[in-house]
Image (cartoon, rainbow, N blue to C red; front, side, top):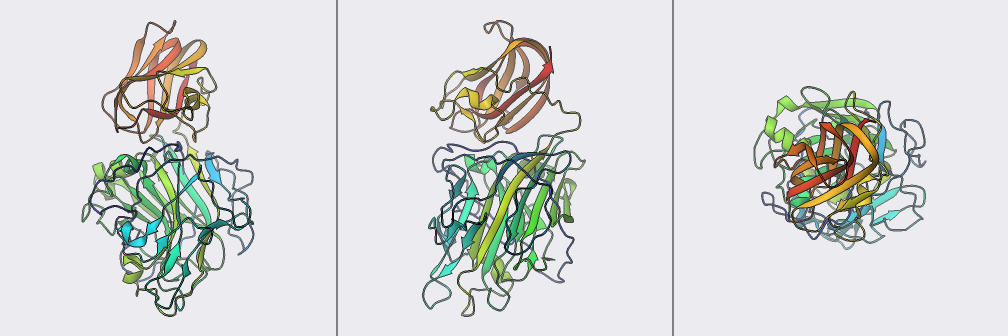
Length: 486
C-alpha cells in the first residue's frame, strides 16, 4: 500500500509479538480475479506500505459459492458470492448477510481497534468496534464508516478496520490463490474527500508468530486516497527502509484510473501464481489484469519470504496519513463525515498444481493426536475437509497427529496445511498396525506453512510426528491430506 509504513500497531522495523494465542485461524486459499486495465496517471507518487498487528483468537467460516462469475454492478444491489473460475474451487467466502446494524461474527473477523497513529502510517482516526463504524447494512454488505465529531478536521475521527481470523489463505507450490472482493469505495470526491484512505489487502501469516514486516509479506489489492477514483496495487517485501521492494513504498502498479468506483460496486482481485516460472502476482479490476509483478523483479529470497506462504485478509477505512499526504493531504475543512467503504462479498479461490491428485483418502477418517490445546481444536479438525478448522496441540515437543485410513493403501502424495504456528521439523510415517512406524517423508527445520510433497509407502495408519515448533505455540494443522491407491 502506498506509504503505509507498518500498518498495524507495531514499530516499523521491530518484530511483532503475538497478542495472545491465535485461537482459530483458517487454512489454504487461492485467489484469482480479473480487472479492468486502467490508464495510469502521469507523474503519480510511488505507492504504499502497511502492516497489521498480530492477532488474537477466532476462526473463519465458509459460505458456498452459488452463482456464476460476477460482473460490475449497480450502486445498491447485493450479489451472491460468484462461483469459482474454471479450474478453481472456493476455499472460503463471506457475503455479509447479517441483519441491519449488526456487528460482525468475531469467530470469522477480528476488529483492529485503537488510534491510527499506532499503525505507523500517520493516520489520525481511532478504529473502533462500534456498530456506528462497522456493521452489516441488512442488504448483504459490510460497511466501514468514517465519522467526524467536532470542528477540527485533524482530530475527532472514528472509523473501522477488520481482518480475518483465518490466516491460511495461500497457494500450494505449483498452484494459484485468488483473493477477490466486490467493493464500493467511499462516495466522495476530490472536493470533499481529502484524507479518505480505503483499502483491501492481505498480510503474511508469519507476521502473526513474530516475523518482522515487511519480510513477512503484504499484498495490497485495493487502495485509493482523497476521493481520486483510482486504484493502487502493491507488494511489500524484504527490509525497511530500502531493499528490493523499495520500502516503505513497495513495488506496484502506481495509480490507475477506476471510473465510477466511488458510486458503484466493482470487483478487485489479486492472483498469487506459483505455477509459472518465475512466479507472478497479478492485479485485476472488474476482470481485467492491469498489473503483473514477476518474482525475478525483486530479490529471490525476499520474494519467497513474502509470497510463498499463507495470508490473512484486511479491510479498513483510514483517515489521513502519509499516503493521502503524498497526494495533497487531508482531512481538511471540506472533508465530509460519513463516507463508507462498502463490501458486498469477499472470496478466496484455489487452483491446485497441474496433475495434483484429487481423492483425499484421509478426509473424514478417524483421527487422533498426542494432545489438544483445548476442546475447540480436536484432531478430527485436521481431516474434516474444512480449511477453517484446525487441530492444535499443547505447547511442547514432540507431538503427533494420526489418521486411520481403515485399510492399507499405497501412498504417493501428502499435503499439510499448517497454521502459522507450524512444526519446523516433522516426519510423515506409515504403519500397518499403529505401533511400528516407517518414515516416508522428513522435513528438517523448514517452517513453511503450506507443504505438498511426494511420498512412497504403504499402511493403514499414517501420522505426522512433529519434533520442533516454529513458535512458542503448539503444532497446529488445518488439513492433513493423503493420496494413493488401494
